[in-house]
Length: 193
Image 1 (spheres, one colour):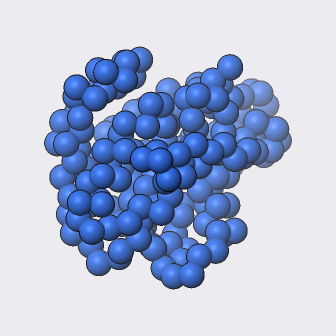
Image 2: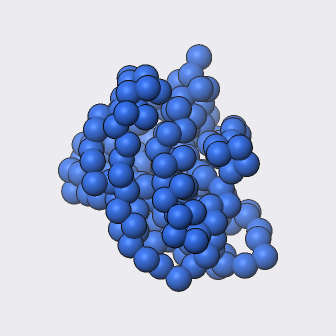
Image 3: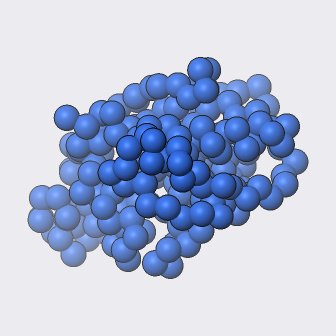
């Protein structure tokens, strides 16, 4: 197959190793939600926007897997903490045969991070793309919570735009007695050039 970025032959991947090194080398971006919860993002939005647009296609499965390995998996290898925590992909229900947040979450599996699935799913599926903060606040996800034993949590999503989805998810978990210690996303829409 050909690399999606440079169109040279790439035998084992949809994006060749050279392009992965050139275009998918993570740079950490940080912001906060709820005043104190750090949200870490790995890529500039403008660098991966075309890849993000594949998330509800068959091709998206492969591209999200590549981005997850280059960001989330690397993070989990280098991260240290004093106890084991859970990671939860926000609204990890399958669309087009897979859940993009589940792919990202799975890449976090390590001796300190246990990925959990189906624990925080939206009951309302309003389209947020291109919507204002007001529109997002007027149409909350209304997450359904499924109990789990871990007390501390890492939230995982693909994009943080206004922070309303991560905030709503964190508030739901806090109401259940859980502590969200940080959030991880592929990109922050504020890094768009």
